[in-house]
Image (cartoon, rainbow, N blue to C red; front, top):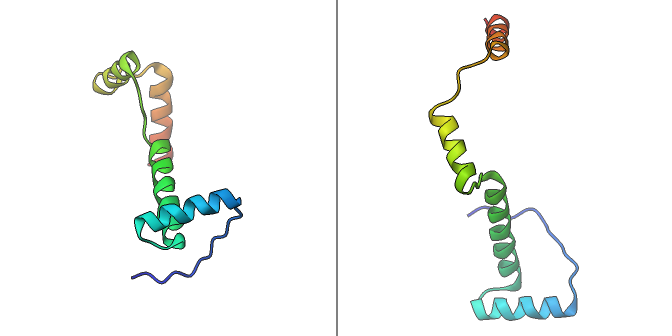
Length: 89
């Protein structure tokens, strides 16, 4: 088990504290464990959502088409690739 060394504090209203205490009780856990687990779950979901590209209908089709059948590079793209290769060797 990992040793917990970091500390996290928060100010809450009386109503928020009572709500959290009740939820922790219903889960059969301590308030601290409930808060940490809930915050970790929310943080994981937030990060996952920000790292996931979500497209709908036409946008998704255009994206997939561009990946599967990309357009030929134009002169500017070819020149940039040539410069990159020259610098990288």
